Amino acid sequence: MADTPDTWRATHAPSQLLGKTEGLLRAIGNTPLVEIPLIAEVSSTTRLFAKLEGCNPGGSIKDRPVARMLTQAVTAGHFQGGRRLLDSSSGNAGIAYAMLGAASGVPVTLVVPANASKERLQRIRAHGAELILTDAVEGYDFALREVKRIAAENPERYWHCDQYANDDNWRAHYETTAVEILEQTSQRVGCRPDAFVAGVGTGGTITGVGRRLRAGGSEVHIACVIPETFPGIEGLKPLSDPNDIVPAILDESVIDERMGVTSDQAAAMCRRLAKLGLFVGPSAGGYVHAAMELASSGKYRHIITVLSDTGERYGSTGLWASVES
Image (cartoon, rainbow, N blue to C red; front, top):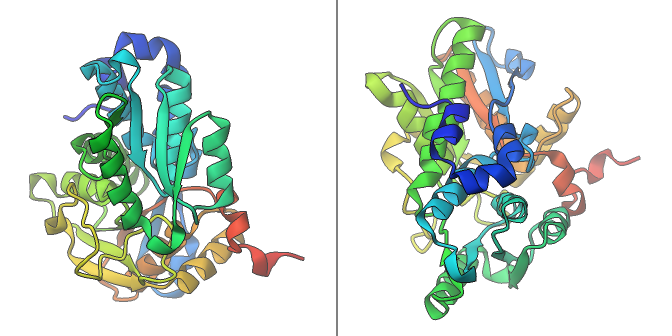
């Protein structure tokens, strides 16, 4: 039996970190499972549920892996001598790093593409993290290459967390997100889900949840949302070009189906979800759009996805422009 989120923190978080950040750490996870009634438009036999990850204190699902990666790094002594945590992020993980770094006294430097939403950059700065912005035209993979260059040239100044290759990333989802999905689905419908929809940012969510849902030989269909290369969906990698960087922790063997979703389709779904009281970001819109396509096949009774973050951090991107009065 895997640890629950609370028992994992009690077991693994070092005492010196718990004393400073216990309240924040205990607020991460145990997010609500909400039902999305839009599914009835395409199937009368399918129910769609989603984890409301904007309820985490950092406002996104990224709080989960960052909390685990940071606590493990503190335990390993990676910040001795005043070394700074260094990583690249499109925004949500950056917020989690900055938030937990500020609470724990760990200095944080983040390499972020300059086209990350203004709201995300403002929050990262508010927590006191150092920002290095890369050219938006160069894309997110350029930021990944830049952070590796900085880490290699300054080993005494930085510890590179590297969420794309850090196994504590996917393990956080294996031991918390997936456990909650199984428990909450069982409570709501009396059985396990038979399909799961997510995408690839670092690969942590789909790898960790996918592996846990498949544990014990369970059959579950796992669909991966793939955005177009441009303009794309913020936070998701297209993985359609041979030159795209594939995250080292991504376990592609858990993926049964790749579903293309455009930024326009994701945005349109975000606006529909807002009318139901669910104010979420574009990746969540993309996931729900794909889940509805999956449901239209009539093959699945219970589909699960994640609403990765909140809609508040996308006002400056134009996501909500069409609903303004």
